[in-house]
Length: 371
Image (tube, rainbow, N blue to C red; front, top):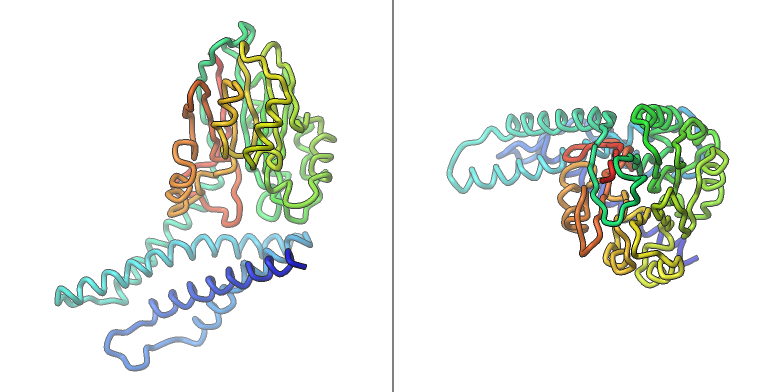
């Protein structure tokens, strides 16, 4: 009952914020300096009213149902939510410009200024939509101490955060598998959030993974979106596709130690430290920790790991959230970094969550070459 009340409270807060942001857009677009009753068109009010409830409505529906019409509705609502972010930022900028020019005693054609700013916001949003669908291959060389001689020059592919659901499905995964196979990696690591956590035929969506092969295997750890609730159907689907699911366990890859810890067992410091101690890591040999989020790299470093591979952050996907994520995760928000004797690579992910936009971050498949 308490959980249900918290969810309802959260939905009410989000919807209230959306109402206010749409009201800001409306007031900014229709404001006329000196007018007692600012001009406004009924159709603008209706359109913004419908758009203000579209994303929450679509989100609630896709957690229970899935069909083509609903997926199209969700995608449209999610794209609008992303565009809304840029419009809100430019609306705030418009009011700041108006205030500054008023103090300076300058005349400003406010509506023309808003037209230019909103035009720039829409242009940025459209580019962000296209950018989110352009997956790059990021090539990284990683030098590890005590690396087995058999691994020198070998390659591994890292992919995370595909978020299969209402926006992306099996077709997107099929393209990712094809791109990975073209690189001929020796191993493939999937660092969680393969699924979005919404209603989906999990087994059908995972079928392209059956074509994903590597000499030393394909490995998966669950992310937070698989573990919103019971993750059984997702993990069963991944295993049915021939991928090894790591549940806080260690495997040997031709002398290289690989440990996989799912998000639920890695999100809190104490359980993560306990899990890593129980795996009896050999500190004299190179090792990799595969876990969804770069939340506690200091614990992995203390346990003796050489390299941690994660995703989760999406690098914020688009401005201004890219700045926020960098503030939260610091140097671990994206890319290759170091803590003590351990290196950390955090991927920006291949897919998106919520608005399918990327500006200030790029979707990627990571190809790691070991030296």
